[in-house]
Every structure is written in C-alpha cells, then in structure tokens.
Length: 209
Image (tube, rainbow, N blue to C red; front, top):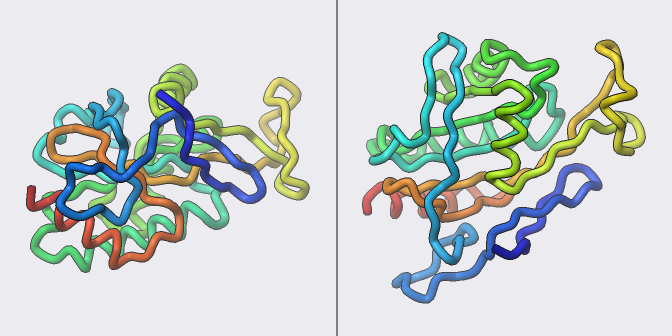
C-alpha cells in the first residue's frame, strides 16, 4: 500500500499508508476520499471505561466513524467531535446505524474513564477508548497513523525518554476520520473541516446500503 493522504496537526504533516482515489465502480463519487483498493478495517479491540471490551469486529451492520486524538487537544479533536454531534442529529432515524468512536493516543494522561467523560460532553452515545502503550503502538501501526509529543509553545518534537510526569506537552497526531462500512471495510476518509452536509450525505448512503 502506498502513502498518499497527508493530514495536518498544527504545522506537522503526517501520512496515512492507504491509496486514496475515487472508485470507478460507484454510481457517483462519495464526498469523502475513497479507499482504493477496498480493504477490511484493521482490527481494533480495547477496554472501555466500564471494563467491557469494544471490538470493531462486533460492529458489523453499523457504519463506524473512527478518530484518533487526545482529550487535551486544543483544536482538531473538539472541532471533530462537535461536528460529529451535529452530524448525528442531522442523520435522524439513521442515527442508530452509525457509531462514533474516539481513541486517545495519549495513554500517559488519558485513562479510559477520562476519554469517555470527554466524549460524553459532546454526545452520550459516543464511544471513548484508549489502551496501554503496546496496544496503541500496534493500533497506530495497523492504521498507519503517527503521534508524537511536542512542545506546546514551539511545536517542536520532544523525546519521550527525556520527559518526566510533570513535563507539559501537546500531541501531534493525524486528523482524518476513518469511515468503516457495515461490512467492516475501510471505505472513506473524512478530512478535518469537511462540511457537515457532505459527511451526512455519505453516511446516509453507507447506512442505507
């Protein structure tokens, strides 16, 4: 698979190793970036705040929106979640066919309970997850995303081995939303700032298929 889709966090540009293209077989193109070739979404299974286990493999029959961020994010994460809450309302009766999942990559500061409380501020049905260092490292490898602690003032990358528990930092992370169809396939990417009506249009199509 080739890396093509670039995403922005502050001044950092990160890359996703999926070939993004319009699929010729669609009657009309989606508004989001279509993943071509179509593939099964990488496995994702993490403990939730109640001690249960959220497993993406058990979400067949739902369209799943999946985003990787962190609760102290000052811009992209709250903007994305606010957009999700509006999208959810606009979906109306099709809402029960769509799941919204937020995974924190800041395991040092975000517990599963922290992440769930954070997403609950936007909508009580959103799923908030995180994992231990090994789980998150493997998830980032599978999804081709990168996260890195950065100096919150300069935006320069920081070496985790030189950081203490009290060291202030932000996290540079990829900003795309992964859209997984009802058959568990990685179908689309939504870029940050994508218009809500365009997201709703795509989700209605996928929920109805």
